[in-house]
Image 1: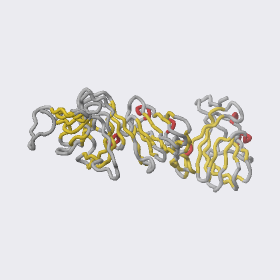
Image 2: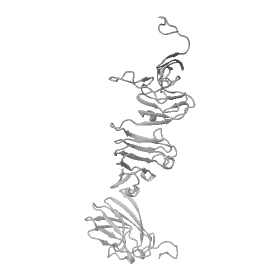
Image 3: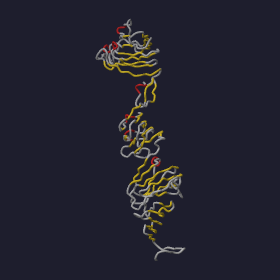
Image 4: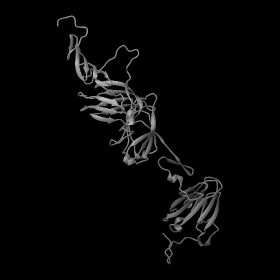
Length: 412
């Protein structure tokens, strides 16, 4: 029911008492100050309350004896927390900690308990309630908001969601995969913490080809961890900690022909595989930083070459033969062969190579060197041409020859 003045239409309240100071020494039931009755404990519009001990409650008058909208401002000026409950202490309306001020009001008066709304006025001055504001990544500690990174264990492949904001995930299994949602749905500020405490690599991939540190996947070896942050269009790692036990990552990059430029993330992979069917020569430009690379050319070359370079003018490049591997050193300008001398080695094996890309060649003239033209054959190539073909039965020379010491033995 609702009480309204027939003259103005405004809500009629019980006889109004503007202010009252209350000391709680026991749970106290309040009454409306009807007809000037001030002999019982009555509710006032503004009440300063002091609880003599913890665990005490202040019970509001029956909600069905007044109109919806009737209200009270309750301030805890004592040192102990108390609760404010509806009529007869049936339900808790609010909890008021020391120094806090809460505003309550009736939203439904269908029965004695009614339904009450509340607004936190804060401590001393009007302020938001910390517990009400706490969301993902935040926790209320007293009257303040604090950072929160709840930790959870992962034991199976996982797809992250927007609700994982500020969560700390720890992987404890073997090798697995995880997937990030679309960056555009997460927005520019979503983040999650990830740590690989397992025994195998965790490969985290993006959705719809979005970039993650310059690639579409990011591998976390055991012991590695980082913040994964969404920019709104891509993902980046912050504080990426690389394991000292598993410090080599692998890049597999498909190429077909023309020029390619590695991102810093791609170039950070020590072991690199190039795949694909070449339709023209390939040149891969690396960032001008000092690093060691193990590069494997697994392309179907078709006579075309794979060259790695820093792009620096005058810098030495390296050609990786098809089907071959090379360990190279980059000093930020030049690429050098890291295997010019093998300490303690008794043999070195080369891939067969071709006339255009000999197995053993020169950095300044990569189509001149030695290679294996076929079974039981040893070939010398100059500028991509086979000029000397040696077999178990003899040698075949292409072109003319000059012999300063003459020729002897056999028939000519």
